[in-house]
Image (cartoon, rainbow, N blue to C red):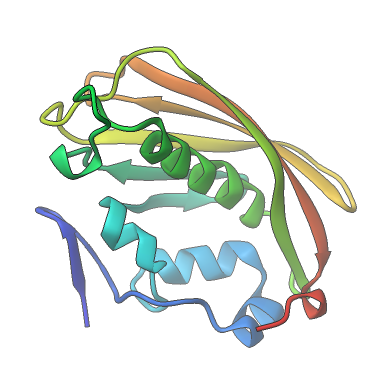
Length: 169
C-alpha cells in the first residue's frame, strides 16, 4: 500500500519500524528499505507533509511541502514544522551509520532559522550529514533549502547511540 504525502510524493505505507528488523539490519539498510517502500514512513510524515527522498552512508535528504496547515498566528510556517523536518534529517543522518544491534536518540539539537518558510513556496529540501560517529555519541549537521537552493535554516544535532535492547515498547 502506498500513501500520498503530498502531490507527487508517495511512501510505502505509514507506521513504526519493527525493532527486530532494525536490530538485524542496522540503520542504513533500514533507511534504504523505507525509501524503497518496503518499510513504513512514520505517521508524522503524513501529518506534516514531508518524507525521506535520498539516503546513503552518513547522508540523507528529506523533502517537504509547507502549507497553510502549518501556519503560526502571523501567517508563516511554524518553526516547529521546520524543526521537525530538520530533526528528522539530522537524526536519520546518524541512523544511517547505526550498526546492527544499535539504536539512537536525539540528546539535543540547535537550529538557526534564517528566512521565513511560507506556504506556497513549493517543495523544500533538508540535507543531513554525519559530522562524527563515536562509540556512544554522534553529531550531525543539516541545511533546509527552498527549490532554488536558498538557505532557509541550518542546524546541528547530538545523538546517543546505545544497545537496541534498551528500547522498550
